Amino acid sequence: MEIQVLEILHQISVKRSDAVVVPYNVTKEELVSLFHVPESKIHVVNYGVDHTVYYPRPAVKRAARQVLYIGEVSRSKGRMLFSRLSILSRRVSAMRSC
Image 1 (tube, rainbow, N blue to C red):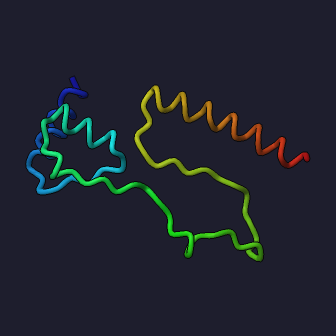
Image 2: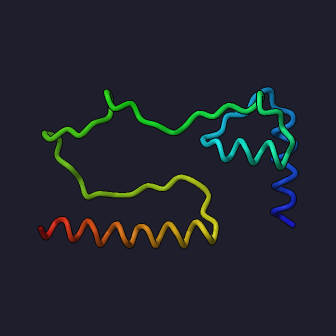
C-alpha cells in the first residue's frame, strides 16, 4: 500500500510541475509511458563532473578511501550495491599488492 501511495504522489507531483529534471533518458521514458507526461515537460540533465575543478592532486595527503552512496536503497539495489563494493574491494586490494 505504501508503494501505491508513493506512486500516486509521484504522479500528482509530475503532473503539477511546470518542468521535470531527470538524470537519464530511461527515467524520462518511464515518466512518459507510466504517467503520460508530455516529453517536452521533461528535461534530461545527466550526472557529471567538471574535470577542470575536480582532478587528482598528487601533493594532497590522502585519507583512507571511502565510498559515499546517495540514493534510495531497495532490496535489489542494496544487494547489487554490496556485491559491487565487495568486488571493488578485492580489486583494490589486488592492485595494492602489485
